[in-house]
Length: 85
Image (tube, rainbow, N blue to C red):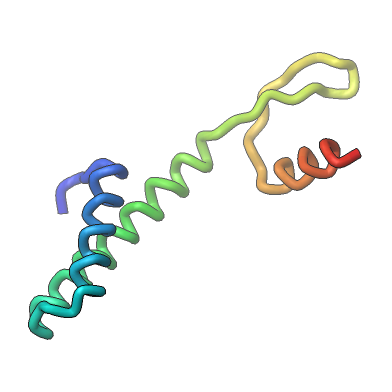
């Protein structure tokens, strides 16, 4: 499958869901687009995982200097906790 942009893949996935929910397709066509949807969802997941690895956040170290480091889901929890204080 050729490289599909994330937004295009998501739009096609939405269309596939709509077609399947409509229930008007014959079984063989439903299976065909379901398989397409699975391939697209795997591609989207891969793109999101790659983007997550690339995300960096700006933080301050103990000396008040700013540094870049890789984003971690734990950072999000710590930021939420510090906002609540």
